Amino acid sequence: MIPFQYTRANNVADAVRLIAANSGAKFIAGGTNLLDLMKDNVERPTKLIDISRLPLTSVEETASGGLRIGALVPNADLAWHPLIEKRYPLVASAILAGASQQLRNMASTGGNLVQRTRCAYFYDTATPCNKRQPGSGCSAVNGINRGHAILGASTSCIATHPSDMCVALVALDATVHVTGPNGGRTIPFADFHRLPGDTPHIDTNLGPDEIITAIEVPAKGFATNYSYLKIRDRLSYAFALISVAAALELKDGTIQEARLALGGVAHKPWRDVAAEAALRGRPAEEASFAAAADLLLRDARPQAQNGFKIDLAKRAIIRTLTQAARGTPQSQSNKTIQ
Amino acid sequence: MQDGAAQSDANPAPLPEKMSVTLTVNGTERRFSVLPWVSLLDALRDHLDLTGTKKGCDHGQCGACTVLVDGRRINSCLTLAVMRDGAHVTTIEGLATNGALDPLQQAFIDHDAFQCGYCTPGQICSGIGLIAEGRAKSPHEIREFMSGNICRCGAYPNIVAAIQQAMGTKP
Ligand SMILES: Cc1cc2nc3c(=O)[nH]c(=O)nc-3n(C[C@H](O)[C@H](O)[C@H](O)COP(=O)(O)OP(=O)(O)OC[C@H]3O[C@@H](n4cnc5c(N)ncnc54)[C@H](O)[C@@H]3O)c2cc1C
Ligand code: SF4
Ligand code: FES
Ligand code: FES
Image (tube, rainbow over the protein chains, first blue to last red):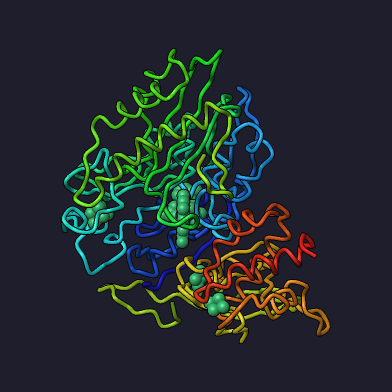
């Protein structure tokens, strides 16, 4: 960790002014990702702007029937918020599948989106990494890449985005509200995170002097037929090898609408609208789910060590859609997969 | 993380000043000055001489550093002392009242819920947080909501039993 100055923002405008005026400054919210990376000298801000006391902690109903979630609502509070539990249980389930209760108590909604990859080379400053040091090379391409991407990767970077919550949010068509020096704008969730291309050091389309103020979820929450299934190396407190968020709207056994997004497979939470379209109008049964899985994975490319992920993803997609169709979502406490 | 973090930049920014922090720790107001990069964990151990809270990984991966801040369990290694100015902190040292152990401390003894004891302060603070949340009830749920506390000695079944006893769900 390098020495840094610390200051507290008094309001959103103050936060934006401070970040714009200090190159090398970073916002700190929960601190659970930033401080971790600072301790390993991966992140080296010269100034921390503490936004954790800004009044962005409410969950409010919007005029169009959705919810506006303040960027500083802790992950734990969001998962257990009555409106989220009742109307957006997919979001609650995805949050509870991630990290630990202590971390969820600290982690903020906004910080969860901006958290960085868990690629071990990104964390290890002794190794080349294009994301950490542009142009230095990617150690994972010919290294340990069991956990890496199977979709949307580039020769520059094969890292995955680690968030669980974001997989549910992209499936539900959330939008991200941000404020910068020129005022506010909204970013559709699917456009928030980027594919690595040849600029893997840029994770998101958030501007360097913009702050996330809120996440908005639209009215449709798919609270009846949904499931979030996370497959990992141990049953809890581990990042996803594969995770699936599935949501369905059914009528007499036929799929009216479908949402399907994957975590642990790409540089961004991976939603596939073509696979969703292929489910519409089809019977809610295994053959339909398998066809959607094949479509979603049509461009999947394994790394040397993670070919297993393609088959695992297919089976996880089928299982999660089955759970959603049955109305028996995966429990995040009893990990038996049924 | 320590006070004298290595200076590795060619053109370092001017060194920051120490900042004054006030915490109410185990019911007593404590005022001290620290550099901005001192974690709450290091402040408790090195500045306030409360060494009951342990440092395992220093990266949020083990739970040994778990304390209660304003009643919620958190990893004290991943928060800065300066960020918590004004907060109420409860550590393992603050759980007993007038010499009587907290029911969860007693339950850990009754159920032999530790071997080396290194993870235990974090386990107990985490368990107190879990009971206060009032969500986890069944053994599956207790295990899941205690998963942020690693026990290298593998005392897990006894930890679950101790928590059940303290919650009153086990005779
Ligand atoms: C051991 C461990 C296990 C974990 N396991 C999981 C898991 O299984 N699943 C999972 O999804 N996550 C997991 N996490 C990650 C955790 O969810 C994230 O670290 C957390 O959500 C980040 O939020 P924060 O508020 O702490 O962010 P911070 O660490 O404060 O910030 C992270 C980044 O976001 C930026 N930022 C924060 N808030 C804003 C804002 N409002 N506007 C603009 N930029 C902002 C900061 O500048 C920084 O760059 C784990 C973390 C740890 C340490
Ligand atoms: S996969 Fe990306 S993050 Fe990992 S070493 Fe390669 S460039 Fe770095
Ligand atoms: S020391 Fe904080 S989680 Fe390990
Ligand atoms: S008792 Fe030894 S680590 Fe838990």
